[in-house]
Structure formats: C-alpha cells, structure tokens
Length: 83
Image (cartoon, rainbow, N blue to C red; front, side, top):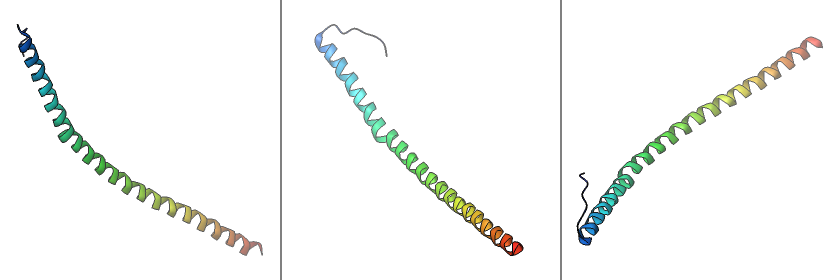
C-alpha cells in the first residue's frame, strides 16, 4: 500500500474509515473462521484424550486386580505349605 498523505480532513477521515472497515473484516474472519476451526480441533483432541484415559484406567484396574490376586494366591500357598 503506497503511503500518501491526504490533503484534507475529509481525506484523512476516509482513510481512517477504510482502515477501520478493513480491521472489522479481518476480525470477523478470524472470529468466524479460524476460531471455529480451533474449537472443532480442540473438541476432537478432547475426545481422543478421553479414550486414552479410559484405556489407561482399565489397564490400571487390571494391574491392581492381578497384583491383588497374586498376593492372595501366594498367601494361600504359603498357608498350605506351612500347615
């Protein structure tokens, strides 16, 4: 954009109005387009994180249950051999 200096007050006001109008268009594009895409992407990531969290919870329950079962089995075997 070439730099020019308006010679009248009306020219200055028109230039400022043009800049403000351009900024309003840019802001509406960012708000309507870019932020909506970011919101959708964040929702997709949230769903993926929830799936991973559920899988790790299930794995943790299996590990704790297996450890508890092993401890009970070993305790029962020691009681068998000691008696």
